[in-house]
Length: 186
Image (cartoon, rainbow, N blue to C red; front, side, top):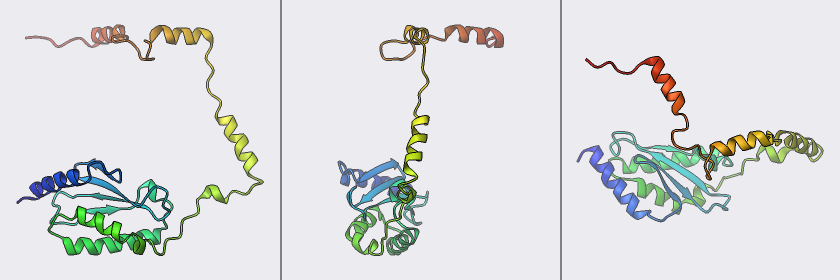
C-alpha cells in the first residue's frame, strides 16, 4: 500500500472510533487534536499531531503549542514530547494515531507527574495596581456613538438581519466595468 492509502484507511478508522468524542478534533485530513483529561483537570493537555506526506513510514509531527497548554511548563512539555517520540519510534511504519492517543490517556499521570502550573502574568499583579488597571479598561470599552440620522441611514440600507441587500453595490460595479471595459470579442 502507498502512504496515501494508509493515511486514508487510518483517517476513516479514526473518524469511526472517535465519532462523538469531544476530546478528539480533526483540524484537517492530516492534522488532529486530542485532549488528554477533562477541561477542569489541571493536569490535562492537548496533543496536536499532523502527518507528513510519507506518514506512516516517517514520524508524525507532535506539538503541545496549543493555547490550552499555556499553563504547562516548557520542561514538562519537553518530557511529554520525548516520551511520545519513544512511542513513535516503536510504532514507525504502522498506523499509530490511536495507539499514541490511548497511550497518552493511560500514562497521563506519569507524563504530568512533575507538572508545576505556570503562573500567569495576571495573577502577579498586586492589589494596589488593580484599580488603575480597571480604570484604563473602562476607558477602552467606550464604543463609537452614532447619531439618529446615522442609525436611520444604516437601517434603511439593511434588511431585518442587518445585512445589505443583494446587488446593493451595482452602481459601483457598472462604473468599474465602464472604466476598464469588457472583453473584446473577435
